[in-house]
Image 1 (cartoon, rainbow, N blue to C red):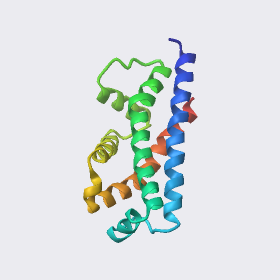
Image 2: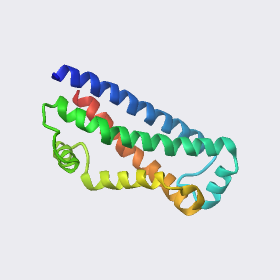
Image 3: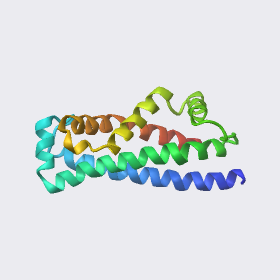
Image 4: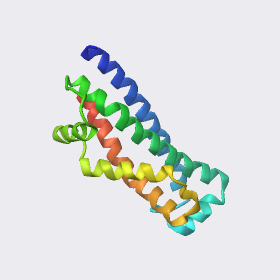
Length: 155
């Protein structure tokens, strides 16, 4: 497959990632109108007692998870393929190469991936954990956006 094809695939995946980011940001903006961030346990209890606010919090969590998945599973490899690099290697080597290019910090990427993995567990039964997850998502989304924008600029 040629560089042009990798570019087309990468643009498609970037569009999907930016859509996840846009939806995450829209939900955050709406919640931020009613609650101060970082949220605390009291705010979280109010959020989960309101169907619309709960749907917005769920949207933040879902879209963050999809965004992180899209970046890690699709965008990173396609970006390196577009750059003419071999991606038939362990994922850690791919991350290290992205760090060399200046797109990510490997240690921070693993922290963000761990956050996404925490989301996969049943956080709803632990208010403290849910509060921490939402606050960390809000803190991490800027880094993901910055990485996406760097990749877009490099196209």
